[in-house]
Image (cartoon, rainbow over all chains, first blue to last red; front, top):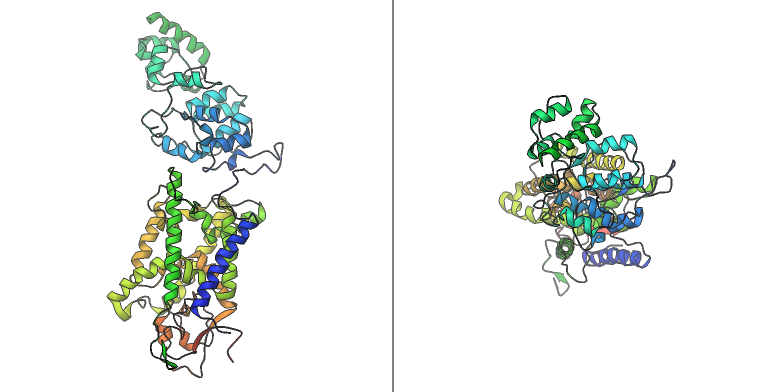
Length: 258
Length: 281
Ligand code: SF4
Ligand code: SF4
């Protein structure tokens, strides 16, 4: 049997669009994923959703559906100001944090979800979280390993200019609008300088700005002051100093300046 | 055209194929634009908004391994790609790689650029690569196929999207496009000035998969030796440089079922090169 071009053209259309129609009728035609992550197949968490499978196309709402973490919390963790946090697509984070030195994106959400829900996640690669997320996580139960990882992988919250698509909320507003808001205020310089509280994120520069001299700082530390942009807590960890003690002592000095 | 039963004018090419190619090019382009529009809040009503990954039959191929072992799709690949893969196989089993010759917009774009090349280089066009080298290079696409399947299976992500010129062609305006894909697309289009369908011949992993069906497809390109004038027109016309005039049945893994070699197009003798199932009596 010979076939010529015109019948062939018709057959191509019939098979192609017929196949699509048939699969649609059978419910097989899906051009989007179901937004349901795979589950752990073995171990203690078998059957639970695996945060490592969260994809860029998921919205915060999809993450909420699978992992039970409210979209508002996710929005708060990543400083997303929107009326509808559930509709925020995870992949948009990269744009918002484009100015960040370390990548904040889908991997960050996976990390956040895993730590938030106490689920296992591979920590052999570097994933970063903004400060707001770290603050929220520190209120959860974390293992010492997770705490160390978190401290080494926390980056500043986006600045208002870098978050032009979804402008970052002012930390104060954030505290009002979100029910589980951060109780310790964010480390944005202006705010910290008005509050003058020595915290985990405070740098030596901030203490200098509050009027405490380098000499006094060095006295309190009992060691020379490093690069002023170093976080005091990081420096304490590095030198094996007790941060809580140093923090209290420095706070006394800061309060004296007032 | 026939007058008093005599063939006066024979089209030199399969025009309906060009129409079908245009249709799919515009169709895919529109869907892709729509996908971008929808992401930014707009969109054309009644038109699919799917991402191109969802509409690529090759996506179905690369996800087979993961689907069989873990039961999930590779990232960005959805059921629709699986459906299209099956449809593509059905078509190829019956007619060979008609997807390449009639549907694939990347093949179409290469043909458009090649028209310019033909104008510049006349008969030299599509004959720049020395035959020996060409014969070896034609198997390169199987290497690409093996690599794509391997990296996809081991990573679970669509690594090929970073290099895919087809995706780049319809997404060059969006932030989703990868530089690698754009570069490969640019090189492909440039080479199309010298060679017909360079990407299809040497690199396309999906063309490689479909090409295998040339060995056993139901409808084959067959040449009737008794009426053949041996003028070699079919071989000269073949975009894939297949020596149609020296075989009875084309089983070359590179045939794209374009029908340009047949008596409906270039072959001057009626019913001599035909698209046939079941053999010639
Ligand atoms: S070989 Fe690949 S690029 Fe060429 S037409 Fe076929 S699928 Fe398209
Ligand atoms: S052999 Fe004929 S049908 Fe196959 S690619 Fe060449 S011209 Fe097209």
